[in-house]
Length: 358
Image (cartoon, rainbow, N blue to C red; front, side):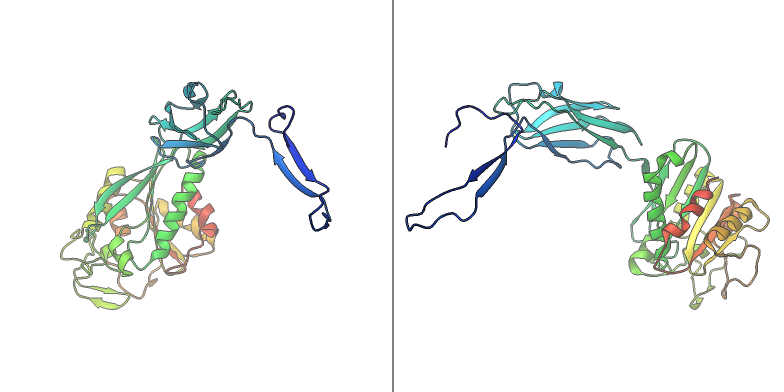
């Protein structure tokens, strides 16, 4: 069948075959319907960037449902609000939007205006827009492990006091690393709650230990017994009994130790929140600022507040990270001993982690 005139664009129709006679005298029992929609101008089918966590210099690719006309200036139809970008036609059905260093945590909108023509000169009368945001953190490599793995810090916020969160100083305590990973995702999703504060998160101080499932680093040194405190010793008692050389050959002998010491010294955080496992308890500096924060945290998550209590552990604590930050670097510190080596319940800790910023 041939139509006498063109059908209106972007309209739904149905071709109905209601009667037919076959050569063997059989007939069509029911009507056979074929629905269809007359196409319109070019429509966007997708964009290659997510709605958050976009690299400030990313290239966004917009895809269309049909080829675009070569006779139009694509830059007159595609634009970015919230920052600078270069627009170019990538292929018959794709347009590239190259962001020009929008900055960190910047909201922006990619728009396609009406009037865009298809290859067959059919005009799209509807506009399209997509809201997104650039990534809110930067990363820095603060050092490398004994086996050469990068120790990475995640930085949020542009100004204000610093709060430092750390995990996996013991490689077998992966729940602490998972908690830091979830905390990073939480901060990225809620940048407005950070306000005029800075947050640094180091998910894994001991990446070699995490990779090996080992408490100690690749030199069999317990990183959290290797700091230059007044009670440092070379041969330590640990969870598995005496460990010869477990405190390192000397204080600060390990690259992992030096990396986190340099970071803490450079930023002088108002509070260190150091995650370990296991114990379901919180410990702050007796009589110090962190004692109050430890009490608050413990109360919010239902953990025991062991601040100032002796005999908490059945092994010696010497040369520890938290003793060094408090006694040597003047950084208030608190320990959160999670309830499992592997499992973490971030939702249970979320409010308390935010509360440590106040």
